[in-house]
Structure formats: C-alpha cells, structure tokens
Length: 149
Image (cartoon, rainbow, N blue to C red; front, side, top):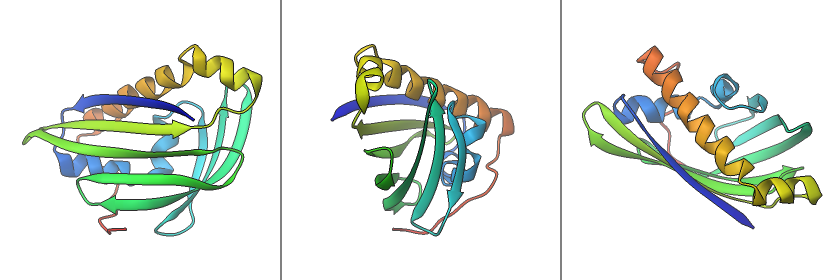
C-alpha cells in the first residue's frame, strides 16, 4: 500500500469547510479526474473516475464521520482499493486546516510508475488547492450533512 498526506489552510470557518466536504456530489467541481459521485445513502458513495486515461468505478463506505472533525472512508467494491481520512482543524474563527491522509493500492505498471513519480501526491495537493479556491470563492457551503457515523 502506498500513502499520501497533504494539507491546506482555507479561509473559512471549520463548520463551513466540513459542511462542504460532506457534499460528495460536488467533488467533480474541484477534484480533477472525478467524473461523478452518487450518494447511495448516509454511508455509501459510488465513484466514477478517469485519471491518466484510466477509468475506474468503485464504491466507498464512510467508516467514521464526526461533524466539524473528520470523515473517514474505505472502498468496499469495485476497481480501486483505498482508505483515508480527512480532518478539520480550527486555526481561528475564519481559518481551517484540512488534512487528508490516504492509503491506496496502485494497480498495474502505469499506476505503480505514476505512484513512484509522485502523481497521486500531486493530484491530492492540486485537489485540495482547488477545494480552497472553490470554498473561499463561494464563502458558504452548497449544503451540509451533520450526521455522525
């Protein structure tokens, strides 16, 4: 398993950052390579991705969700094997640090070479920067799910 850890500071309160992160269907607006996410329930999402010409579909289960603190997931079915957690840290009333940690299993020669070259790390870093731009430009979240898992 390979691992990546990246973070970004966003100029919105923790509640706003967390609320937006729970809106999985909005991820294609800031995550490069994510074509679609369908929420099949409080704990299950179906992802369609296309990264580097490799299209994948998989289901991910929310394994832990604590409002304003963390969202953890693990794939349960499909063409990708990964698990991770996103945590939200209050810096002050208007600034939040978002930390993403993910473990994944590259499949095949192209994914293994890409992993060794840091492609996934750069992808995650870019996605977090695009999330920063997305939420800061809006100033408010597109929705929220405040339940716990």
